[in-house]
Length: 204
Length: 253
Image (cartoon, rainbow over all chains, first blue to last red):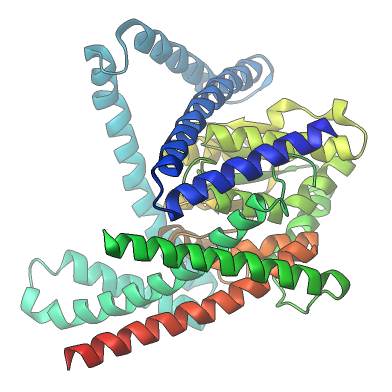
C-alpha cells in the first residue's frame, strides 16, 4: 500500500504545485515551482549515473559474450571511461574536455546528421519504388518542392519567391494543426497523471 | 504584464475545464465505453510478439529521446502506454524485447515498466536488466548505436515509438537493410517526415494519435475520457482561432 500510494501522492502534489506555479502569478508558487524543478534536475543527474553504469554493464557483457562487434563495445567502454576520467580531472569546461568535444563529438554528430539526409533521400526513392500511393506521391512532390525552394532559392530568388511563400504557408498551417493536436494530447496526458488517473511510476 | 497575467488565467481556465470534462467523461465512460476510431498500429504491436517468437528472434523497441523532466515527457509516457500490451505479452512468453533510449530518466521508467510486467505475472526474478538499454546521450548517436544492434542480427521487428526527430531514419534504414519489419510513430513534424517514407501511413502513428494508444490498448475509462475531452477542447481552440482572426480582421478594417 505504502509502495503504491506514496509515489502517486508525491507525483500528484508536485505536478499540481508546478502547474499552479506556471498558471498563477503568485510569487510563493513561482519560487516553489523553481525549487521543485531544481530537485527534478538533481534526480535526473542520478538517473544519468545509473544509465551510465548500465551502459558500461551492457558493453562489458557484450564484450565477454557476444560473437560479433566486440570492437564496438570495447570502443564504447574505453571512450566512456576515458571521458569520465577527463571530466573528473579537468571539469566539463577544461581545455582537453573541450578539445574532445570539438574534435570528436561535434564532427561525429555532424557526420551522422549528414548521413540522415542521405538515408532520407534513399527512403524517399524507395517509397516511390515500393509504395506508389497518393500519399507517397504527394510526400515526394512536397519534399522536392521544399528542396527546390530552399537550395535553389539563393540562385533564383525572383522566380521561386511565390512558390516558396505558398509552400511556407501550407507547411506552417499543417505543422500548426499537428502541433495543436499534440499539445492537447500532452495536456490531457499530463492532467491524467496529476489527477492520479494514470500512474506511470507505480502499478496501474 | 497584464497581458501575461491574462494569458496565465486563460490557461488556468483551460486546464480547469479540462479537469471537469475529464471527470464527467470518466464517469460516463465507466459504465459504457465509447466507440473510438481504430488505431491498427497499436493493435498490431502485440501481434509482433507471436510473429517474432516464431522466427526465434526478438523485438527492438526504440522509445526515443523524450526526457521525463522535459517537454516530451508525456509523449514518452503515451508511447509506453501504447506498448503496454506488448510488454505484458513479452513477459508472459518470456521473450523480452530489446528496449533502447537516449534519455536516462526514460531508461529508468522503461526498466521499471518491463520489470513490473514480469512482477504482475509473479515472476519478477525472470526480468533481465539488460532488456532496457541506455545507448547514448545524444539523439543522433543513440539512433546510430541502436542501428548497430539491428545490424547485428537476432531481431525480427523494429518498433520506433516515442519522441524522435530526423534521427529515426537511421533506425528504419538499418532495419530495411536486414529486411526487418518496422512500425511506429512520433509527434514531431521532423520525425514524421523521417518515418513516413520508411513506414507509410499504415504502419505509422502520427501526431496526436500517439495519445490514443493508451485508450486502444488499455481500454480504460480514463483514457477514453481523455479522448472525449480532447475533442471538445479541440473545437474550443478552433473557435478561439476563428474568433481571434475575425477580431483582428475587423479591427484592421
